[in-house]
Amino acid sequence: MSKVVKYLSPVLLFCLLTGCAPKLQSISPKFLLENTIERSEKPTYSKFYQELETTTSIKGKIVNTQQLKVWEDTISRRANYELTDSENGTFYTIMSDKYMTLYKKGNKNATVKPLSFPHPDSFLLFKDEVIQKLNELRTNHQIQLIGDEKISNEQTYHLQAVPKDENQILGEQHLWISQKSWMILKQSYQIEDKFVVVRVKKIERNVKIPQSRFTLPNSDKIHFQYEPKYIEDIITNKQLMKLNYLTLKPNKRITTFKVKKLFSPQEGIEILFLKDGAEFLLLKAVELNSEDINDVRPNVPSNLKFFNQPVSVQPIPGVGIQLMWTWDKKRYEALYFNQFATKHELNQLLSQFK
Image (cartoon, rainbow, N blue to C red):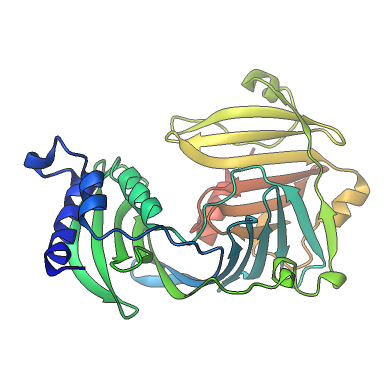
């Protein structure tokens, strides 16, 4: 890469993110970036291994640390996420194109269920995908280039994103993007009163991943519970009120977007809640018989309780946190689309169910 291009790169990146250059308004900033910086073809990493560390702080005090290991085959769309949480232990999430297996280390049971949400994006973003992510971020944030910094022995562009609306849930963000590979090597953001930092600790591209890596360790000693694919029927909020299920009470910020009645082999409901127009919570509840009730109780004691009933916690990397409990002969699953929720926030969420 020539010295001229190296000099221009930060300037053009700045223009891409802010749309600030008045003389260039008639030309697409993305076109300028892609055609001025020395362009490399999109790499083909069919398989990769990655390690990430996430720390969550409140008022300068670290309240949670997570270590995440990712094995991903981008061609077959299979992935294994092994997450060790400083508060809750080690969790496994194994995904294929259509199914997801959830397991907490130490439990006797694992759950296999159809994906009820889009397959999470790959943790390894390519150049075009990073640019798309930045363009999406620019919708609600004002982005500026802070400068060059070295992260993990790589030169990066340090970007700052400040929300245009001070009431945004996702506050100020910082991203450190590799000048060589365009990977996001580090990012930090403010979420209400929490400060979250995510660092890439290790990345291995085009590695050999054995088939056994996409199964649970000691799987021969684990009982797999298979969740059926239900028949669904859209119902109204008025029809929902006549059913005997716990749910969140809508308010000015929280609204129901879609309500479904589930049939076969058991009856139940599924509700998608929005908060300030964004996905907030996916709630599912199904009827249980006495044998099912004993079968779904968590084998490992939980720190969370719902009316003195244990609540199991399952982080799903790239998606959020799933809570599961039984109440009144029903199994409840609440997928909270907030990967960094604290124990206090989860307890607050549970207290809203009535």
